[in-house]
Amino acid sequence: MRAQKITLAALALVAGLSLTACQGDDIAAGANGAATPASPDGAKGGSSGDAGKEAPGDDTGADEGSGGGQINTGPCKTDNLDISSAPGMGEGTLQIAFKNTGDACSLKGFPGVDLKVDSGPGGVNANRSDLAAPSVVLKTGESTRATLHYPANNSGGSGVDITQLVVTPPNETHSKTIPTKINVPVTDHSSSDEVVIDPVGTGKQ
Image 1 (cartoon, rainbow, N blue to C red):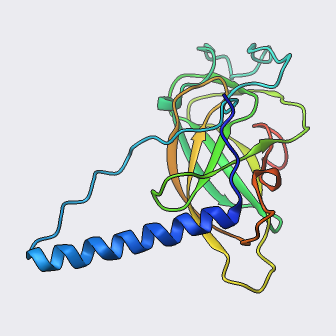
Image 2 (spheres, helix red, strand yellow):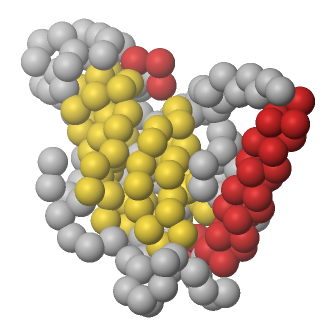
């Protein structure tokens, strides 16, 4: 089932409610003389129903001759990928990197990406671009990237800070939550339609 889209204005409202709730917890903790221990981080967030899957018609085979002679173990597993993000080359872009920490494996398709504010509920699910998905074989220690496109905040307002990405690699169902810092405008019409993810292995690598 495809996750329900929410507007960026609604996401900003969630962020405000989360901040208010945190402040309320701090006041309560002060009154009782002890703070409540924070929940351990690392809970895995959800993603849209088609997150992490390949584009229709894609196969999972790796390109012949790639992998540097190492045995290709098949699709890369989430547990064997070090996932991180960094600013892209252009405004409104973010590079999501997938570094292989296991044996040689392959990636092909679109990662699932959810944009979240802190650890609050809800989020904005990235849609797939129209780019074709190449097959990429990663040797141990090698990386590939996918580009996330989002609406840049040129409104003059403070916007809303996206602080977490929940990323599901192609052909996987397990996600990793990674820190990030991007700012998007707050408008009633801005939705996940304006947040787009390219397949891994495309663009400048």
